[in-house]
Image (tube, rainbow, N blue to C red; front, side, top):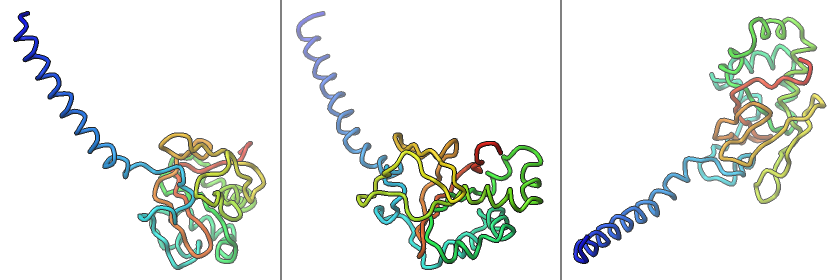
Amino acid sequence: MSAQKAKDWLKKLAGLVGVASASAMIAVPVLAQYYPPASFFQPSQHGRVPIRSGDLAQEIASKSEFKTFATALEMAGLTKTLSEGRFTVFAPVNEAFDALPAGKLDELLQDTDKLRKVLNYHLVAGEISAPNGEVAVSEVTTVEGSTVKIDATGQELKLNDASALPPPVQVSNGVIIRIDRVLLPFGM
């Protein structure tokens, strides 16, 4: 390769590297807005998270994606609890109930004690974040008494084997975290 061809080739390479670098500098901040931060549990920290004026029970009952969850809460007698207390609710969407093993939902709906146990496993008293909005714990104790493991190390927030579906919703008495699976306490 002649010296002139080598110079031309290096100029082209330098131009290509420059264009690629400029593209990356533009793309990274744009893409970052689509990934949930580690402060997932503190919705007021992000401008795009809805803050509703109603309470937990009203918000869950008003959303069609929580129809099964709302029905189960009513059957277990927990709607009044969600209207009066302050909680973080891990709320399974309808598809999460559809994914349960065959017959499991019917079994729970026919046994109020088991149903209440499973639903209380989706409730945590108070909010579970540090003052700076970061997830402050690696597990939380639920109202049911068992713990749920929290993994906020990646771009996705995991609660046991369920994934949180952004954005969370803050209401007057707590936070609703939509999840893609029903959480079952050990032994259920």
